[in-house]
Length: 210
Length: 244
Length: 68
Image 1 (tube, rainbow over the protein chains, first blue to last red):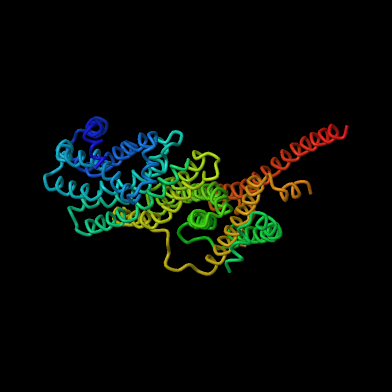
Image 2: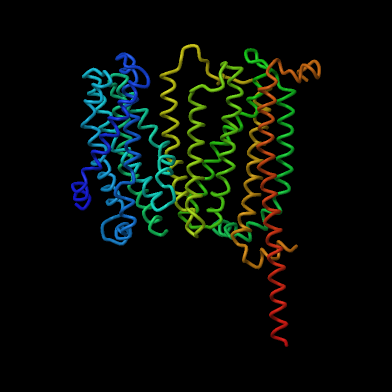
């Protein structure tokens, strides 16, 4: 709907996320070691952390502008259930940040000396985990929208909640794809999809009342 | 039962009633803490492996327990504040947060000081210390959001939502951190939990834990009373209280 | 008593810094939080009282003006 129209208008946002991710991944061989065995060892965790950072950076996209334009008030007053609108916002975040990251992961994996099978599990873990990140980031954005220094506040607030996803995701890759982690990630995703938009809706009402 | 709830919900009633309770609570705190301190520092046995450094347990463990409990209590207050819109619950969240954060820092500091004689290093990434560190970040988040929200009537609501989300996520975070560390534990690292503690050790520990809880209740109520006075400063009863 | 002498207590089997450091921090945090609470309370009371006397002065003045 409206969100997709916005995204189509500014693919620049998606490109920004992509460039950020590639840039940061490039820094690590330079900072630590170009040795493939070292890189392959840290690759899963590194890509996941970069995904976290990119998601946090992109969190306020669309939401700050909506607050300023009064769109959030319309969301609260409108007929569509608020949780559904928040779910769509999270989906928009995923489209602009998560999906590009997913598409570029094979490249990142190759840069970090990952085997093809490892890249496969990397993609699987990101496929399940990135939506969770998007849901949390949207929640964080709604909690902090309109506040002073919200761009610093948001990562501080939301980062702890991203840790379980981080741990499950990296473990799934590092264990070579043990299905236990897959099930846990799927459970986390289902739980997040059901509960977080509701919480985000509450946050929107609070934000609008400021 | 609801009547009792609503009675305590009135700021004035809370202030008056807690004023009567406070000296007793203070007395209890002093008794429990001094007994616990003397017991733990002087009377309790030293450990076969850790020597006298095991005495740090008598402050670190209660601090860690209280750090976590205080977050739960703060989040419960947040729930009451959000759902029933009771102003004093909102004040309770605001006053609990700094106390909880300091407790968490204390747990981390004493944990580090215990770690040096035990493992030879001031910091180690184990499940307990790491989850305590994350808990500290959760407290800081609530504090930061609260202070950024300003002073309006609804200022505390965002922070209360955050506290609740933190509460729900806390088990998830603890579980995943625990899992992470059981997988990555180096072989030489020994766990600090022992299967059974002799009564000479858990009795003083219990006294200290109770003492810490008592201290927390005392300090929380102390600060909550002041917060109530500040929020209701225009009311007549506050004028009477201050001038007496 | 688990210690033979005052000296052995103060040494804490070589761990004195850590043990007394931990206990000292604990006491400092606990006492500190209570004392700052009491101090804030005193500051509030004093600020309230001085504002209060100023207000009553004004009221007296206004009442005097009304009376005259």
